[in-house]
Image (cartoon, rainbow, N blue to C red; front, side, top):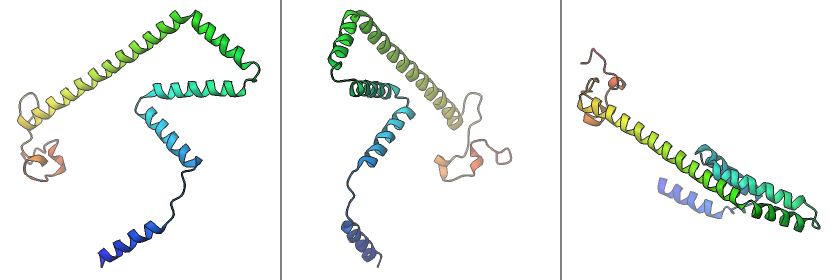
Length: 153
């Protein structure tokens, strides 16, 4: 009987018309991705996107007659100061590399430290007392196995 009801549910779901992908769905997905970038620490793409949006707003609001002079003025300033722009590009990229390797090193050290503590708890040695019974040895144990109860040992 359960197979029949599942079959009916599948047929009903096929009959429901799918809503078209509208502006609000796009906005929801767009901001979900932006917030996921921010939550994972990847702020560079968000800053770049914000910068591009600001440039787009300036171009959109600027009068059409004066836009060519604005673009040529910006390009001439960047062209005359290309050494500064290039130096800033190199400095920011090197800073991101240093930051990446610093975080990678920090995480690797923490993983190594926690692995050593786990090894001492599971196999003995060091200052920590070996755990004689744990979940991975012979099935579920009491929750106090992380900090062995003196009455059980």
